[in-house]
Image 1 (cartoon, rainbow, N blue to C red):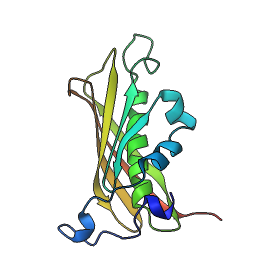
Image 2 (cartoon, rainbow, N blue to C red; image 1 turned 135 degrees about the vertical axis):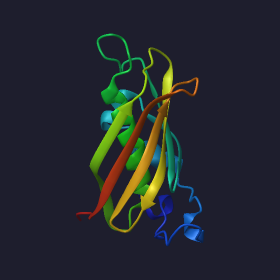
Image 3 (cartoon, rainbow, N blue to C red; image 1 turned 45 degrees about the vertical axis):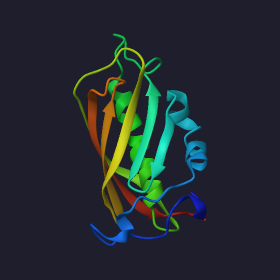
Image 4 (cartoon, rainbow, N blue to C red; image 1 turned 90 degrees about the vertical axis):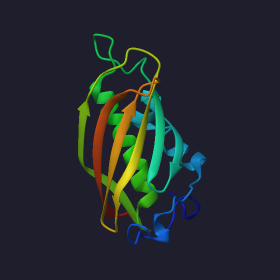
Amino acid sequence: MTEHSRTDRQPSGPGSDDDAPTAVDLAQVADRTRVGLAARMGIEVTRAERGLVEATMPVEGNTQPMGLLHGGASAALAETVGSVAAMIAAPEGHLPVGVDLNATHHRSAREGSVTATARALHEGRRASSYAIEVRDEAGRLLCSARLTCQFVAARA
């Protein structure tokens, strides 16, 4: 992410001014998800700010053999929104790497699109954690997940 697409501030605790959402350049975030797995799955980031990221994904093309949304697709969507949130929160000169992802599947979908929302649980100097919900078009909870990312120094 460029200097214009993230903040260099580190949160200093609940209730501080640093907890206020920081808008980022959605076009730059979208460019990062137009390649690789996110692109193949049709994932589109629709909202991105410090501590909150949302994205949509079509069910079609992301199903298992019985025609239901694949649990791995829900997990990949969850990891994508959490990773984008971590990119925004990463300290200058650092990149996030996922170190833990867990997902609980509550129900599935057969058609339409699903939306994932990542909300920060913790954004620190060394790591960040996000609670992620994946919902169908009717707003029903399909999957709840948690992602933890560690920040590592970017290589030159």
